[in-house]
Amino acid sequence: MESIKVFAPATVANVGCGYDVLGFALQGYGDELILTRRKDEKLVITSIEGVSGLPMDPTRNVSTVAISALLDDLGLRKGFDLRIKKNISSGSGLGSSASSAAAAVFAANQLLGTPKTKQELISYAMAGEKMASTKAHADNVTPSILGGFTVVRSCQPLDVFNIPYPSELKVVVIFPQVEVKTSDAKRMLKSEVKLSDAVRQWGNVAGLVSGLILEDYDRIGKSLEDVIVEPVRSILIPFFQEMKKMALKNGALGYSISGSGPSMFCFLRGNENTQEIVWNAKKYYHSHDIEVIAFVSDINPSGAIILD
Image 1 (tube, rainbow, N blue to C red):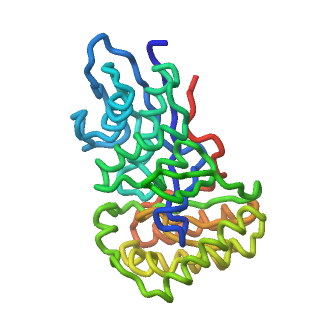
Image 2 (image 1 turned 90 degrees about the vertical axis):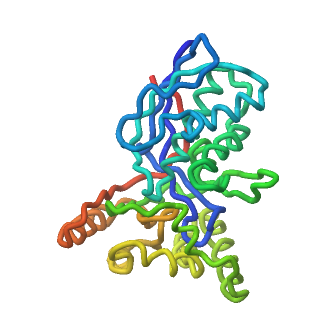
């Protein structure tokens, strides 16, 4: 096989209370990548569609940095051309860099004869993430590669796994068209938190994971509370409180920030009221002259896949 086309989904990381720990993959929204073998040992980005301003330099692009990490670990010197189609804009809070890094290492692994499992590819995608956000975090790349709902127990050593979730669980994503840089959003956070806040947050993480596994929607809603990150970062997102109030009024189980923002998400049981929330979000933002993308999604169970 000389060439391969792959897809890696967008993701929601943190999931309210699970900062740098929890994440899940979205359905039908993500990045595509075509990887083709070269006769030399160069990594060359031939095109990037969908967004502007991303580096073509292979030492500065998350996709090629991730592939380089994989090749170095395997002790191989191979060359590839990359054609990247970005469907997720940078600074969206939906794992843009993670999707590109995940797609790249997944594609390279396929062309190399799958020497690594999907689980093992995560650490190489994290090397790409470090290029984008100065920290090799795993809460976006893990669900983008594995799919489903994921937990990062530890980054050093890496320990990640999937957890089950209710089949009726639906997601509404609301993405006002303003940029929030991950690095800036991280700088806003305090290096220390009150013990009482930490205890409450740990309880919510445990409750959310338990609620997902047991399909207890009431517990999912109660646990989707963030007392540490959301109060700080929500001020960067226009009309966050108004959107949260609207979603909860329309039946959302809970509402929070996706990643670093400005995207937000809410969970619902089934499709009832999902379109109502989408419609209200679009109407509200447009009335304030802010463009917005809003859509309904299932949780993507597959993660990175080969496209025909």
